[in-house]
Image (tube, rainbow, N blue to C red; front, side, top):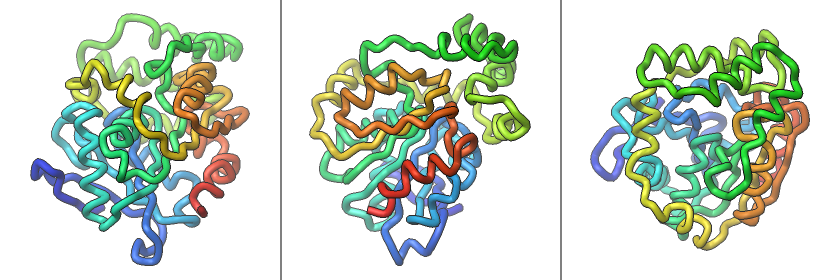
Length: 274
């Protein structure tokens, strides 16, 4: 893990996966959660073998600390990391909630981002498509998933104790199956309620309109056909609204590198190699 200075002087963390970044410019990575410990990304199914990755540890994560200023403002930090690495234009991968920061950066700094890959994005907020995760989960017929859906759609946590309980109950909804592999992954990468709440503050009322009106950059959206959290219809509408290519991975939930690593590598391999 290394550090870099943000525009406001805050020291933030990042990590390099893969080869020496002097050999080829790294692709930047924005984790989700929001503000979840970045170790949940694991090695992203080894895609750093194709091209080095520079993983931002956003404000509010355990390794960078502090609190987010909101995902719209925190787009500055992605640009600061690119500056630190000497990248005038760069490619970026965002996962889940981290895709919001990627879209904010693309709208606010259109000359800096070259391409984006948006993996199982939090999507329903960008379009009018209704979340269909409950229907996806209901078809599973798994009691653990039913409990997860009840928690997801019920009253939201108001303190850390409730947050921790909700995360445990809702974990099965993050995956298309619930085996030992998924259970183990669900416990990696801590995050707290205060950090999550901070992530959603300070976002301008016209953020969605500005994102949709921003100049288009080539974008790839990778979705999971069994992703309860993001849904399928919202991800399809999201990709269409952004003019993005869409790859849906079968038998896959919210973390494709965990459940379908080969398909995930295949989906991103050509994009990374370009």
